[in-house]
Length: 259
Image (cartoon, rainbow, N blue to C red; front, side):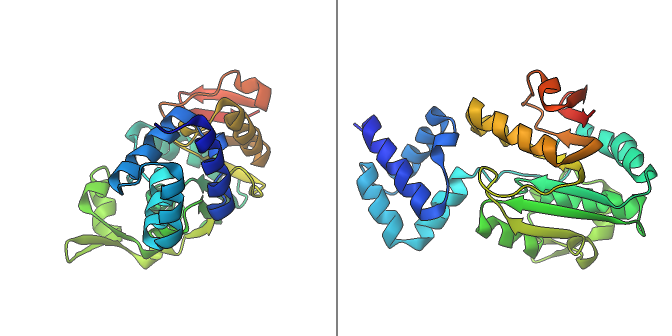
């Protein structure tokens, strides 16, 4: 049976190897995922699994990808995108200043690319830029490639699917027009610098994996990165308790505005 002390040692070694601090993640969820991988690769304890990760770069890649929960879909939670398209973006665009949007924990890029398509429709000649960050450099490479399975596009409005995607060899390829609108970069949300002066930040379905202390740190940092009257969007299964502590006001479930 795996002992608690072994897990503490494992966490330290993983932080040294890949920079991922497992102490900031909910322990029960994280240990369950790690044990699933250990069983899949036939390792009985953390020491043996660490040795395997050292010997096999492909398994280390799988481990990092598996733990950073890369789940995404274009226009995921359609009511959130309805609010973005009908209320948030028009309000921000009316200000007439350069619009800076940040998709944190962007995974395969479906979220920032969804935003780019909306903005190309709403303000094709406007001054706006979209930043997208994730911890996993391998998933960022997939995002930059812009090649997607059809099941990820089920919520894309048909007009946008026809205009911005090309089907080939069983995949859908995103147009260069959309791809060039998004700048991707690697980031550790727990340790790296946050992008300042954003009017819209999305960090969706990320907080649920972190401890309460780590969530507080992240929310505070995101709030500081927002300009006044800017919007912060989290996952639909997430919430911010007492958002006023961070200078935020709840607009509707999952959407907050900096006061």
